[in-house]
Image 1 (spheres, one colour):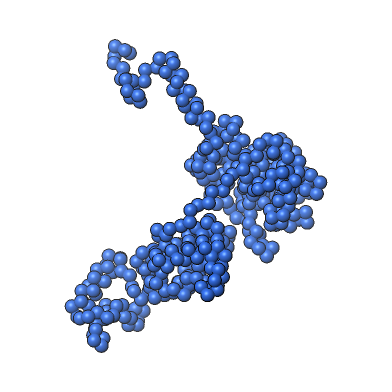
Image 2 (image 1 turned 120 degrees about the vertical axis):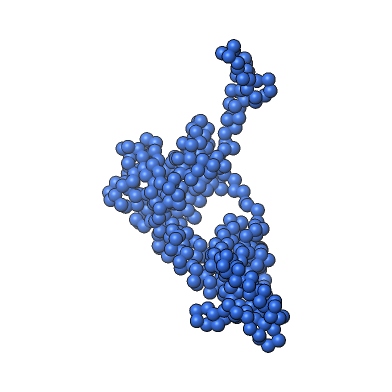
Length: 387
């Protein structure tokens, strides 16, 4: 690294890959240029050096370099979804920007366009507003890319950190009562009889829909009344289906079957090989979006349960277990949550009886004369005479 005169000012130069590159220019005199260069050398020695020239790379160019290596760390489903967010939202709006041009204001304005959409062609290609969760997912991908640029010493800090995000949308859970469960299963008759085993499995085991679609015949034991969750399934579009391991190790789990469900599943196993899918379309193809987007809506309508989502069947199983006093740790294991905190955050509000039992226990202790100390919460220390 060296300084040299350049017209009426000074600049700092460096040899990179055998070529001379200008690191910084427009410095007023030799003294200032020397001081700046010395500071850059110190940063370089400490590992904090950011080459300003690297920040001139556009986000499009950096993504071309970064993304192929990054996506091999993703599962096929995540590779598809994150890649779509990059290609559909991030690069069309920010790809032309140089890395050093993307600051907190640019990122915040980007998020604004995701939330509000772009209704006026004069402001760019027309875009519909995105849901809150989608906005957060897109921003998350952008944050990862810019973090990689920070790691590569191309920019000094991640401008996507601290971005103000839209408030989280609260989706109300639906919990079916026992009569409503009966109505739902009763709706799976006639032309919908074929789908009764799938619906019964979801409303009695709490499996995720994607886990149910990935079940193989060899992982279901109707005599032992259990099944093994080892995969999840996603429809990637164009007739392509992706089967991958669950998101966390806790999702790989055994699940018990009720006697009623075991009897319901037995005919669905008949005539199939161990590696065949348990649930398919009537023509043998993997279950398509047609079930979720059309058939399911008709089943729930016939049951008088408008608005019921497939995922609400999972919530229903959790609510039924909790209502019967099943510990949250057991509910966690059955649902395959990654931690008890996830289970508690989702369903802890369904356990008001816990507070009642705490109060009752303390009241009972007081009633039999238990010494809780002169000050509430401070136990009395017994001396040797007291035993």
